[in-house]
Amino acid sequence: MDDGEDADLARLGWIVWTIEVRDPEQRAAPDIGARTEQAMTEMAGSLGCVFSHCVDDDSYDLTPEGTYYSWSVRVPRGEHLRRNEHGVPIAVAALWDYLRTKLPKGLDDWHVRPDRDLSLRDAAADVLREAYPDLLRPMEVAMLGLRRDGAQNLDPRAECWSGIGATMAGSYALWVATDPGATTPCWLVLHVGMVPPAGFWSSSAGQRMSRFSPDRSDPVLILPRPPAPLWMATIETGAFTTNAEARLTDPHTVGARHEWTSPDAEQLAHRVSRDLQALFPRLAAP
Image (cartoon, rainbow, N blue to C red):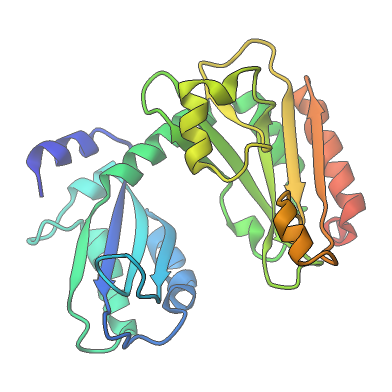
């Protein structure tokens, strides 16, 4: 591991570590990510860490590794610095030991390391989120008790898509429940932020964000904060698409997009909470 790079990461409050194994012969059973998710979440929490996600790649596409599986865990700085004799954080080593019990013998091409890019993006996302407590806190409070199907166990997520320094742009998502009208399992996800200011998508931050973020029609978070923003929240059913070609392919597909705006964050949160319970009555059930 590069000492200079590790020193840079050690300044962050949280560092993302990845535990990856290569499986070119596809020996592991399908859905290894889904089958280890709950245990990894619980074990990471007990160790003071946060399990983020698993990349469960069962394909032979353009990835040079071939088939591989990669688990990402957010590790607090103190645990990041507390290493075993192999230079791996003790908490991460414990998670690695668990994963080895769940995979077939003979899979020994493991790569355990800090992910510099994910760590810096996570740190930037934390900065974005902390810059908008007046918007995000009322929304999170308003949604307490409404989230269902395990969504209540998923932390709302800010993502920084452009910039790491003083100028940043990103998004914020809050998982609500599974979509009752979807033909395949998917989540109803509430996106919260501001209506993009005029000229944002043609700016350097906007152009970079549009290359990586899911949808230009969703609200954004921006630093420095623009004056007097118009707050915005959106949610879509799983079948909704703005893609005209996709609609022509399946003209019977039914979907919907719901959108709210207000200059007052408290009023926005109240209206979103009220309307979601009317749109999806099971969210209102005790």
